[in-house]
Image 1 (cartoon, rainbow, N blue to C red):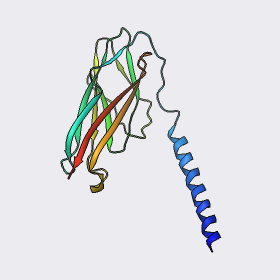
Image 2 (image 1 turned 90 degrees about the horizontal axis):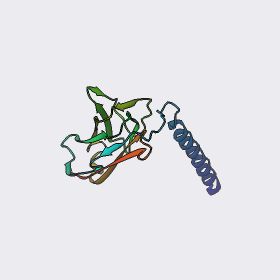
Image 3 (image 1 turned 135 degrees about the vertical axis):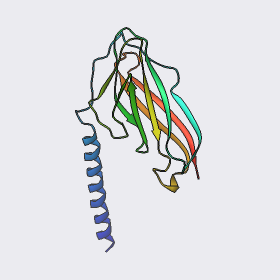
Length: 165
C-alpha cells in the first residue's frame, strides 16, 4: 500500500513539473516586442523607487506615476512592460496615447515611442485586496520596461508598502 502512494506521488509530481514547464515556455511568446538598440536614445528617470507606506486592505487601489524622459536625439522606444505580481498593473501614457494595461504575464507587441525631448508617464496600480485578507503585511512590487537605449535597456521600478487591515 505504501509503495502505491509513493508511485502515485511521483507520477503526480512529474505531471505537475511537465505542466509547469509548458506554462513557462508558452509565456515566452514570439509576439513580444523587439527592437534594435540605439546609442542616440537616452532614457532618464528621476526616481525608480516609491513607498506607499500603509495601504488599507479595504481602501481601494493605490497608484504611483513615474516619468520617463527621452534626453537623447533619437526616438526612445518602450516595450515589454511587466509587473511582478497579478495584483499590480502598469500603463504608459505618451501625449494623448495610453497603452493597454500590462500585468505579470502580459505579452504584447505594443511599442511606445517618445520623441527626443519628450516624456512618458508610467502609471502603476496596486490592488491591496487582490490576495484576500491573508495578503496583509509588507509588499514589494516591481515593474520592468524594456527600452532601445543601448546604455539602459531595462528600467526597473520598485514599489513598497505595508497592507494593513
